[in-house]
Amino acid sequence: MPKESLAQQMSTPRLVDEDRIKQAGPFVAISREFGCGGFSLGLLLLDLLTDNAEEGKNWQIYHKEILENLATDTGLAMDIIERQRREKPRLLSNFFSSVAGKKGKMPSGMEIRNRMTTIIRELAMEGHAILIGQGAAGATNDLPNGISVRLVAPEAWRIKQVAFREGLGEIQAKIRVNEETERRLYLQKIYERKFSSKPAFSLTFDCSVFSLAQIATLTHRAMHLMKCV
Image (tube, rainbow, N blue to C red; front, side, top):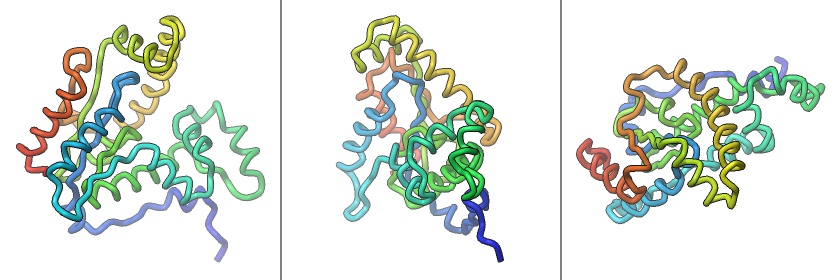
């Protein structure tokens, strides 16, 4: 039997026991507009959840680690995976075809996103996971014992945050926010089609109104009310 190409391996669905799905979590999936500090919220939640965690059940944050997991799984560089996942296929198709050469078809953005969804769901089912971005909210919206949080803010507020965080002038920060927002909108449309759920998130917060510390406290309280912890 001929060996499967990397693309074929990544597009092959992995079956999961339905009984295991019922025992998923607890987990938190954080989605955010660029400039809203999703990882910082994850760190604050980690402190709150760790304080009350049962012995041997330590909470973990997963952000770039999801890409690292996929890079190890496929042997591809993280930057290639991220670029292929985010960019529209026509922009990079020629480049990736040349990189792949005779070794087999380079995985498409869809195949990479499918495998990332599998990884994210696996982490959520293992439980005690704080999942940052990467389509985690959509990928886990049917799993029990979890909560999804969306961070938003007016564009002007986010531009100021990015300017301060990255040491940019206001014009440069605005360009940065606009470029990143456009890239994320492309992925958002894809994930909304694949994981249709209304409302899409358990909680949505305006970061210009609530501080991240307040959002962490409110999310933690909501998790208790929902019996996610």
